[in-house]
Image (cartoon, one colour):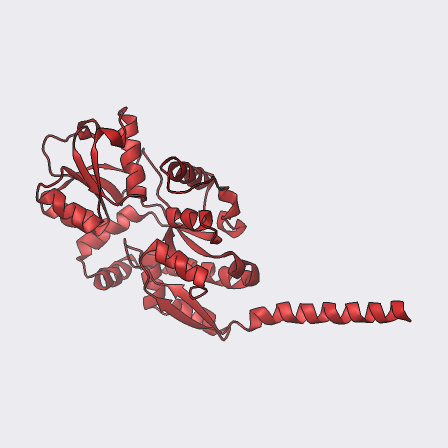
Length: 317
């Protein structure tokens, strides 16, 4: 009798657990997604402007909430707080920092590999190659892919940041300091590059041949475990937006230019620099390993973390 009662109780608990797990998916009534327009995230802009996510998730009875959070660190914080489900576009450095700090954020899709988007710029006629950076003042944001680019460019010439005067500064202020002659070079990206070129700046180098910048889509580890179907739906919607963009390029660029408040010519240039994707490759995994090593060597994280601990398998298809 006791054995029978035990079997019955186990069966009841199993059914209850199954129903509870099933209910977790059904209980999702809203999904919170970050909206990041810059540097020139055209597929995401199209997705939002065309209401594609609202339609796809709406068919499942789920309301889409967009939140304009441009900082990768802020997106990670919002994921940790449970107020953001999907970081639509976030940089790899922010994901690594989050995981190193004990905030499990997973990459579930690729977004873009904008090697031409990130640059070292100068307005000093004496600076013609990275070797000429020795003894010069360089302004830019520390702990970013731009910082990685600077270190890599110096290393190729047998130099280190000890050979220059590196000033930790945001991109807009750094570019302005360069154009006004207060510093010799600035680390710049996207529209800041275009605007600087119009005002006397020139690109010294881009990431090509130095580092491989990655912009990806990410979410909290618990969200990935509970709602893999929602991530699949998001990826499918992103691909739909990307395909629409490619099939209607003229209209897509016009939409992007309007949203970013830039000219069509500038939109075309930024698009050419973007290199959109939807998954990670073996080379991208190598780039993540490089990022981890860079951040460890520069004291940005205290211990080594395994890249595969924060890459969801659906990102590798």
